Image 1 (cartoon, rainbow, N blue to C red):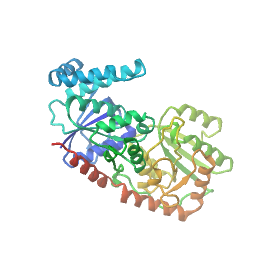
Image 2 (cartoon, rainbow, N blue to C red):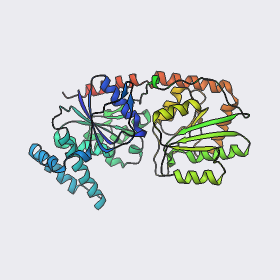
Image 3 (cartoon, rainbow, N blue to C red):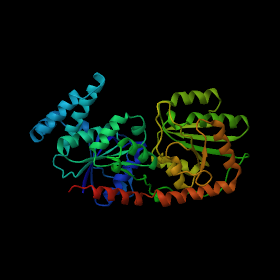
Image 4 (cartoon, rainbow, N blue to C red):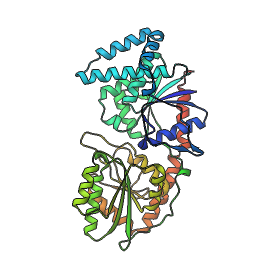
Length: 406
């Protein structure tokens, strides 16, 4: 089987789950061609060193040649979709430009894969990549599918989601929570198209920590959070919890890995509240560094919230990684997180937007060594049972094979 993946950026440091998915498919004999709108900067390695990606970038594809090719080979469909892009209902010039850009990108990508026996076009994210994949499909007749995650679902207009679901062969999503939401949008006629597969991780790649409580008020509690520094991650409330605990005399060290729109505001908060010796901002880091930090930490805290614009996480992959190493997690019940983290079993669930609740959970795990050990062991077991990448790839291949038109 030959599958074309359409991505916004590749490789992307916050989307290593896509790289892992592609590597697993290739290890099973699937030919994967990656079409990326932009080139990323973080390169992922496979188990045998640097992985050779079959990837092509939009900037490297000749625009004129692509449109001539499309006119000669898909004349009728080309002009139908061009007209649709120009005349589709829109609210103004920005939408018109977006439609034209999507059309042009789809034509250029079709030109790039003109010699491939592409059986399926699959987009990761039901946003811009799915717009391109759908247009490629409408022009060429190659079926398309997509994977929907979190931001791309909950900040999108329902009408837009419905159109892509209807036109797709199927839609994958990574949680039951997302699946239920998308099925409601799809309606009974198309609900069966929505498929759920958890993102799997390779537990062999995430060294297991030595379990047991090593923290107390007399020692230093080492807290880790890996997240984009944006509203929905709830980092404001973690910083407030740290400030409160510092005033109570707790010895703390918090490492934040990630960047985002709120980086400067967080750094200002840290200075105003005299947390410079407590909080360390590392920015974006590769997986080797992140693995080292998982091993050095005592607790992983990710207090996700529903953002003011409705954006929210689905099931953050960093929670899977933390649990795979045996690192106890403190998080919230936003979206699909309870599908992974059960309170007092595989971690601690705290209230949203509540610094005091986070503080209480940190104190509890620092003082209750039996609970610390229990959630550590149960978390690792949960990953091995339900989030193993081998199982996820088996399910993914089953769906790809079922809908393979070849």
